[in-house]
Amino acid sequence: MPARYTFGGDEHLFVECSSEMSLEAFFQSLSMATAVRESQIRGVTEICPANASFQVKFNPDLIKPDDILREVQAIEGLAEKSEPVLKTRIIEIPVFYNDPWTHETLMRFRERHQEPGGTDLDYAARINGYGGVEDFVAAHAGSPWFVSMVGFVAGLPFMYQMVDRQRQIEVPKYLRPRTDTPKLTVGHGGCFGCIYSVRGAGGYQMFGVTPMPIFDPTQQTSYLRDFMVFFRPGDIVKFKPVDRDGYDTAVEEVDKRLFSPPIRQVCFDLREFSKDIDGYNAALEGILNGH
Amino acid sequence: MAIKVLHPGLSTSVQDLGRPGYFHLGIPIGGAMDRYAMRAANLLVGNDEGAAGLEAVFMGPKLEFAEDRLVAVTGADMPAKVDGVGQPGWTAFKVKAGQVLSFDFLKSGARILIAVAGGIDVPEALGSRSTYPIGALGGYKGRALAAGDELPVGKADLAEEGKSVAEELRRKPGTPAALRVLPGLYWDRLTDAAKASFFADEWKVAPEADRMGYRFRGGRRLEFIDRKQPFGAGSDPSNIVDSCYPYGSIQVPGGTEPIILHRDAVSGGGYFMVGTVISADMDLIGQLQPHTPARFVEVTMDEALKARADRAALLDRLRQSLS
Image 1 (cartoon, each protein chain N blue to C red):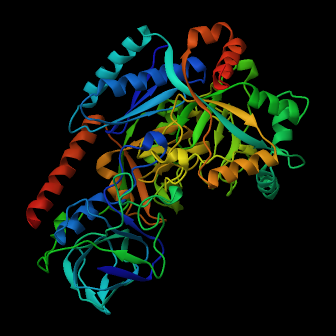
Image 2 (cartoon, rainbow over the protein chains, first blue to last red; image 1 turned 90 degrees about the horizontal axis):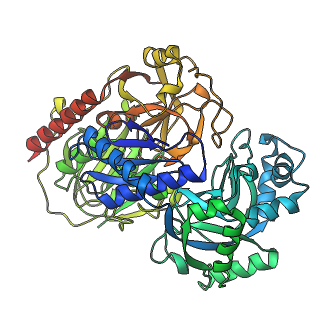
Image 3 (cartoon, each protein chain N blue to C red; image 1 turned 180 degrees about the vertical axis):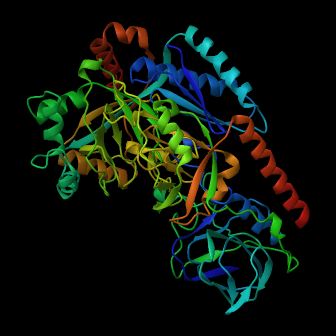
């Protein structure tokens, strides 16, 4: 699909690969953003990949807007011919679904919700056609997710589940945003999952929490010593449901600086994935589990 | 050398010229809302233009100095006082050991920039001393100042007192504030009538105006061209598949109240944007108070680049006048 180019003022070039979300659009935007980074165009100061688009910040004192446009358009031509393959990592993230902290918060903001009588999980399960919360959680944790964008606030991953469109979980955001969300809440809005990196306002439905910090400006957390932000666009995430004991144990390990999430390097091939999505995901999970 | 915070004002934070390079991870550039005023304040006291100073909004802090230091206050018109004695704005003056720097009420503008010779010497975080409170990053302990804080200040040679920025080199928004906008991004989602009213109407700064973004209200509601919403975008016509947000981009949730993202912007989200305030006018936004009337002025890319060159020339004149 041809990308749409538009300028965000005199310092940003905005490239929309598709107006609708799909794994193909995500893949194209990430590939192009990566190619732009690698081409080291003079005057480019920042490249921000998003779900189905990306943004290039440039210094117009060093490169004319028309020239950056031409350079990035040329990269689009090259990116179309390149193999849809991504070297990345798969990470297992523990999640305590239906936990007491998001539950307390969602009860506190119930009047801002579509369904004041139930919980966010009840609601999401019902409108996505699941028999109950258990089936819904099984689907949420059953297939992996691409980190399609990192942002909004520091280190927050937007995630898109690696399943066909019919099986994508879709939920509206809260009717009015909450003023509070527990840190490390696993949420969902539209077709995107997320993990709230910090406590704060939010409008996504809340399903659970992970014990694993993903942003640490003090860089004390064992796996965040090199850099304070955990996620990168293109990471693959597999959620692992844990119970209260599993959650408490993990928190203790994090506090003792012993926790490290299982991570494996993988090479993702969009063509192979598209041929047999469930088979491909099972193979990815096998790699994660050391098979 | 340290400065003791006796009273923090309304919201005072350590800022410099920002932290570029991490927006792709959701960490915004930050730094002084009014960069020109920040540079001027630093030049007045003999600092590098990018040294860290204090930015205070609407109400100044009360600061006790442990040593003699040259100080300059630029940006908004909020007269500084040393032990109660008034000091001129945009001018370097001395604060002696034991004296207290405080401020009168705000007369115009919104934010003052306070430069102290030697700069505020908090540790750098990701290459900058700017405060990013949502991420508890940079600045003084990652937050706005509080009473009792002791701010470290770098070493400084005693520079000359009395240097001043000429009146014509002090940059301020007009009335109504004219903010030049390059239409783009998702501009074509609007009907022709909405495109016209956006630029024709007078808007007012809403009370929700801070370092992350400035909200405006008072103009007509923007109508959208009908479409079937794309998969993943959400059901409201103002929704898009979550994308990056440029600095200065203007989103209009629900088509009602434009929000201009500023230095502490969220890096992305699911609201369409009608265009972007040009780089030359970003500083002006930080000096707008709530209820200030404002107009959006349509410009082309060529006009945006010309305005950028004009602003750079003004900065050069400022540098020459103070060198």
